[in-house]
Image (cartoon, rainbow, N blue to C red; front, side, top):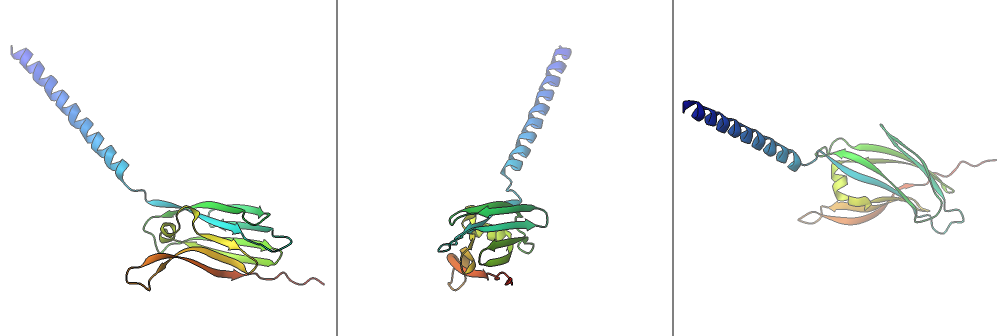
Length: 170
């Protein structure tokens, strides 16, 4: 009788250990799944808005320290190009720096774009864009308005960079 009782106690103890082990795995997997990611995705958008010109085409190349996105051609107004970047969450002091060279019939512009984690929260789903217009490169997007008691996002549009004319050829 002691032998059967001892066997049943061993089986119960083994089952209890397996149940505790499975429960520990389930809890740890739930905490990993609920954890927020340490990065955020953002798109940098360059849009052609060269209206009123005979040749509204623009050509541009964007690159960062780690990646070159290559040359792209936008033959007519309305065509845009977006490329994704990944920013580390909570890092407001370390920006992702991209240098974009933009060329058109009116000249050239070298745009330096610095994005931080806060910019990614302000501009979700390519809502902010750098537009090539006849005046130059115009930023259209959202920025914080600190003139009110409670800061809020407001739409802005301003000239980032005028065109540098092509050198005269003689």
